Length: 244
Ligand code: G3P
Ligand code: MG
Image (cartoon, rainbow, N blue to C red):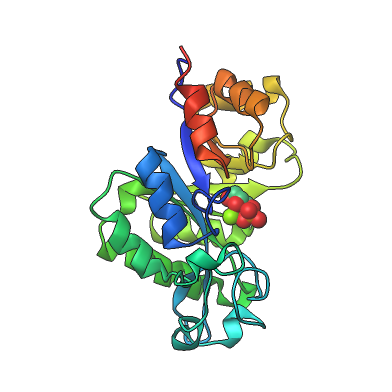
């Protein structure tokens, strides 16, 4: 298929690996995904770590709220056993580990910022300074459901691409996106109609729906000309994109 749509492995190649682990990221890279998406929040000692839920219970051997633990404590937990015992040695990655891993690779990083509203500035500042330290500004998209956080990120580092994530349709999205100075609109599929997406694409907005795992819908978004797609099944998406 003729498309430039970037395929982002959502939480890594999470259909066949434990989400948000180095194993899931490595798998996505090895099959040729254009990018990975992952979620970042702060530990008690203010280290950015990669985990989706506010709590440890679903995806680790621990229990309780992520931000109640220091990184050293979190590193003793398995982040892979819940998925399959053979991933027992996977731990919660720090953001720094992922940046080190990515720094010698051609791979895009969608870093989704999550966390407490009273720690927004801290999260933005810590994540951006780390991206800058590894000179990965051109490889990163910063996104969040917290649009205040994204506005701050844009102010701190205008050179880094940003996106808002939404679960419900925005009224006059173009004006809203321009007011925040963000480039991207990450919407929960199937929120947008084709003509709405088309108008935004024509206006230069980077449209990236999530989380798309069905063949027909992946194909549809590629045909629409979406800038990217978040999928748990990057191999399936790559196969569709590779169709003649
Ligand atoms: O960034 C797209 C998507 O990951 C947002 O939702 O809950 O999977 O982080 P969630
Ligand atoms: Mg996410």
